[in-house]
Length: 130
Image 1 (cartoon, rainbow, N blue to C red):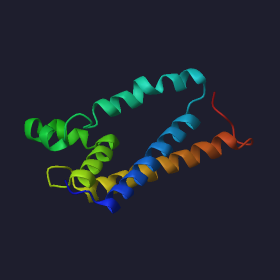
Image 2: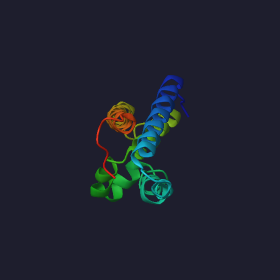
Image 3: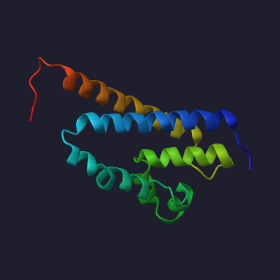
Image 4: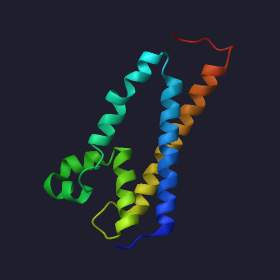
């Protein structure tokens, strides 16, 4: 067991930023309270279920390489694999640098979406779609 404190701090910070931006983006995007209630079933639960939460990505890759490559599109995969890499070390996980880079890109995308949606929501001059 080789815990890397710097990697752990970095991935916890990056993962927290990602989830905060995701939930803020969803909150600004949803028009009604009913839509917010459906977010768990439609977005969060599939991300957890198919995000390498239960099995390491390497084990999935050995048994189903095509599915494993598709799972790399899920940001939850990178959060979990980077945590495993920081806590356990070793090479059987997705490389820490790759997971960090992918999470950074997801953070940037959600930040841009959140910024655009919030400006649109708060700007009283622009026409709103109902």
